[in-house]
Image 1: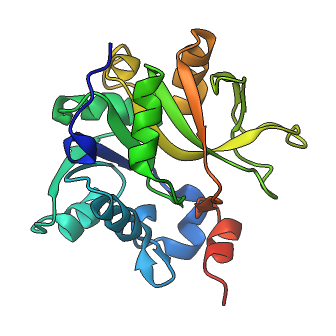
Image 2: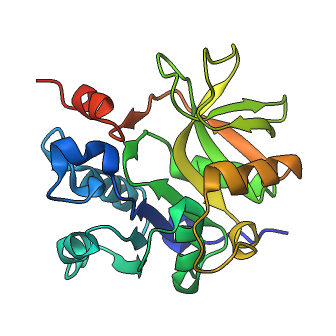
Length: 238
């Protein structure tokens, strides 16, 4: 049984920003992907401002590649408690969360990809997650013209029935894409191996879907993703 914390002020927010960002090296080789700019601001600053504006007061950065830049960028700020879960070697999205668990106080906790943006009411998302007693919940968006991300199918109760990462070909009608914003119960991550590389998208989510413990929360907004040079340019039109 989930125990509801006092709104978002009681929820830890983890931002996954430790990836190597190899696909963006041709454009931003001098900084980690999270410090790449969208509309003149580092994408991490946009995410942090949104979290602060909705009430989050404890933010954990899962850092790896060029981590010193992110740590220096946020250390000393006092709008919230900023912490850093450091990776000595790349651990993937699943391994990064497992590595950060010793710093996490809340259950559930919020997770955001550090290279994408999507507008969502986090209080409503939290209420949805708690009402369904989910182990994991994903914010979902319409795919639009995207054909290169994970697709998600849900049933009438918004339980996720299928999760396929980067399918080949057209996205089936009635599918969504993951917006890269999640709520997890601690048990959904704690069983993973320590200090090993593994993926939320290909290792964790499919297992939770098979157990019927994963739900989707659709939103009307689109996803801005800077993970590739093409999408980075789309997010920063000249």
